Image 1: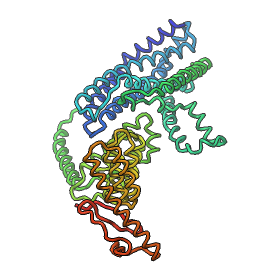
Image 2: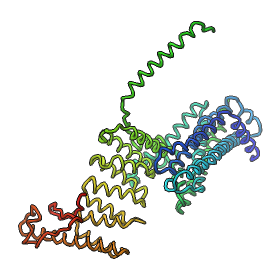
Image 3: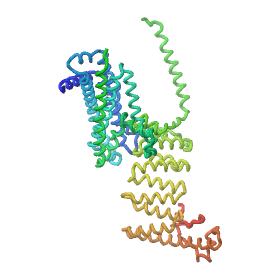
Image 4: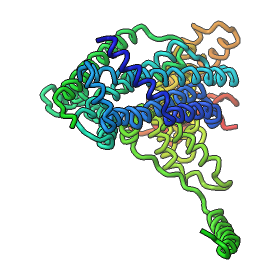
Length: 271
Length: 273
């Protein structure tokens, strides 16, 4: 089974690497990152923080474009061109197909993030050395890696949602709309919960409980946002426990989402 | 498809376009750009998600560009409300971003009471996000003292700030001086006594000692006021009325302090220079 998954994932990766749109996206993202050298000129004091926010935001932007305009399309192409039929005519189960495509797209996303993270760190290093220490005090490589890891986790969650929606709905455009809606709910739900924060002490409040359990379905992506740590010297020890819980949540969320996606594909009529 | 004679139409069309463009440019040259108020911070947080920090930073850049383009002689009060609103939203979206606090202090503090109060509210957000920052509480205390004429509030701010790590001794001193200006002479005396104990420099100790003596003399005047009001069931209109029945003479502090009287409190204020 692992060999089949590996082969399918590799085919997805190779298909993605040869697409001009992906190459264009990488080029655009790299150009935007370099543009960070100019953007920080508008900032008088907090140059380190703004520069690292800019780099990570470009990475997020590239990741979202990849997910919405390649990942969604890649699965739709598979069905439109009947590629999936070819795969599934071989001894590969539908569940293996779902997992293989997810792994392939995850790997492509990882490659994209690695390229952007490497360039981004170079840009940040350049900015740090070109301004006074007071404006860019610390650049922690460890925390920088953690921030990108957090970004990658957010992207994996959205990719898992794309897999589920692709199983439910034919055609790429509705899947794209559903993914955008999913992202908006994930972003907006914490703000709504925050508005009810004074009422959370009252356990009998149905609305507050409902919002809490909705977060289990539409996770708070802000919990993987570690951008502010990049310009801090040390990570506090309490963060380890939080990170452990966050990554455990990520693992189980992906497990459940892919299981649901596999179940949908098992029952789906491909005609 | 042959264009033929139609090619000859292109130059006059281009000329007409250029003329209309120039006219439009002249029309818009004299129009001042207004600063647009930002939507509520909750809305921006919900919409922007992971990008909320960059949205806050771009909004800050927008205000900075606006401030750079304000024509000389423009009254700050014409844009201070919108500017204060925008900085409030930016700092609520991204409290860790330090630049809006400095800009709000620079461009809004002192415009009017409303703007200064808005700045203090913005600075409170910053002090929560940066609890060990010394500059933000200094700004807030300065605003209370200099622009809002609330020396006791300023004194409270400086008292709390003096307990921060690496806080300069100036904060405790300011707290004592402003407390005296607000009429809390006894508290100021206690503060100065503590500062004398903790100071290492003899020159500084001597100065604190001299100030403490002045505060003690002012406190004697305060006690005379209380005695006057107990007997007469009213406060004196001026401190001169206390002489000679309640106090031998009013103390003279030279150029160091002026004795102030805002019933029912006697205070000490640095003279205006």
